[in-house]
Image 1 (spheres, rainbow, N blue to C red):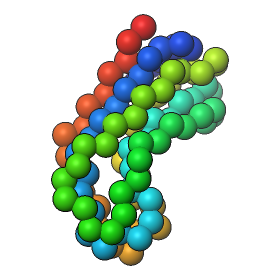
Image 2: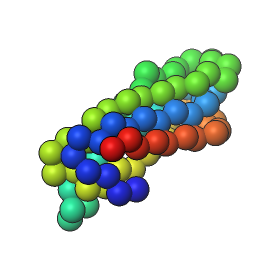
Image 3: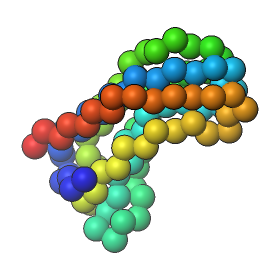
Image 4: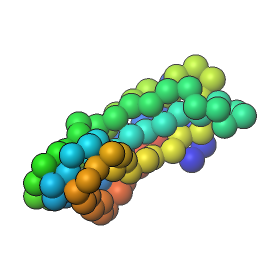
Length: 92
């Protein structure tokens, strides 16, 4: 998604985990015009056994930001993670 420096960005997702041992979160990653990563903001992380919970993260697009990408992270998990109802908004 296109973005500009100073944009207020918000993401949310519903997530559930079962025996999750790693990082399970929603991340907003910002990239420059050449699509090189310049920053990341993450929601709280879930682990273990969690029922459906809404995760959210807010961030302001940094200088040189041109692209925003939401990432559903389930990293280094030996268990399972599910995501549903992803929402993303950008306010100029």
